[in-house]
Length: 430
Image (cartoon, rainbow, N blue to C red; front, side, top):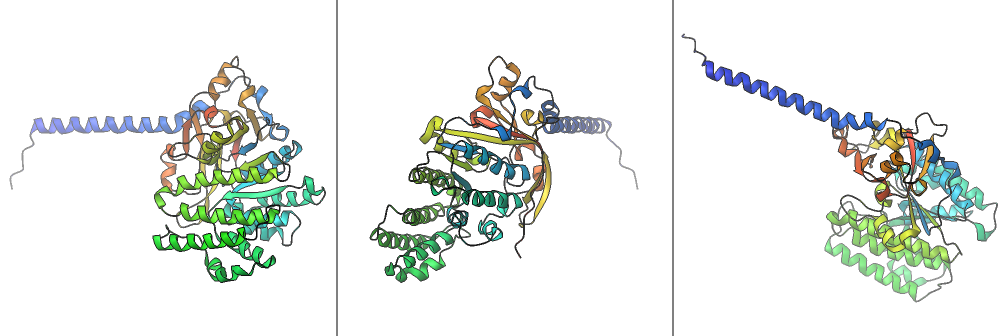
């Protein structure tokens, strides 16, 4: 069999194509490495006089504001959960009495009853919060501290605990039933079975479900208004139960609008909490949620922080948070939680390495323009960490899936920074 002759011209072209493809591959790899690891190396550079403005978290004094918001770069790190208590303790010294969490309103109302001295155990209260990220030792410390504090002060000094999220409906419906039965509002029994069956859907409500649920809440609301007692905090709470049910129904009409609606209604709930606190003579509220909810602007849709800034202006003060390194407890698609390591490339968080305090507070307003390096960092785009409650292996490859590239001062008024964050441990109920 005659061997096929090789065309030298074609062979040379093929050889050149291989060289070009190799060069392209090398350039791509270099660009990818620079994109992924270049910011990490740059972020480690020392920022002059950073230490002069970064304060220990335990010495925080916030400006006068109606709402002070604390963000968290992740839900799965010990440090960001510990901050809630550390910051709230400082704010209580400044006159704050209300703590509101990114958790379901109805769940937190039950926990608040316990904080006021009600029955139950600490474990039952942490497990009552339907988000597993709060089934932790750190959340237990926050709740037990609030209960202990309340046991030592007069009624007018007591602390209150709220939730402003609306990813549950059961506790709101259960409270409506218990309130009516405790106050001998017998008309509610006609709707008791329906209220006991209410639950959040796994997917969007159908038109038939929306009509049925809205009619139910309309009927319940009418019954409650016929027995109005606006001087009672329990009555105001039960009326708000119905508002949360209305909003949850609307939020679950269309899956594509779920996130938008959720942030809109979380902002609405925070505003209700502000007004409710006025009934107790309190003019300040402390709230805590993911950075992505409290920030004054976001990437893809209007978030809670944007709504609140529109309503409260300078009376909405936002403290963002970030890490330089993290080992974060995150759930995979199947729900199993595991720890994963990431680097933010945040030059501000990188400065915390070697400092005496593990976490430091940086108020952007106290940094003058004369501190050019630090001032320009705060007021220029930089990488910051941002991890949600979902892990995918692609996050290890594509940096933009675990970082944002924004101007810190446009997002927040201040930041709390951690060099290395450690994973939370979820407590499993017996």
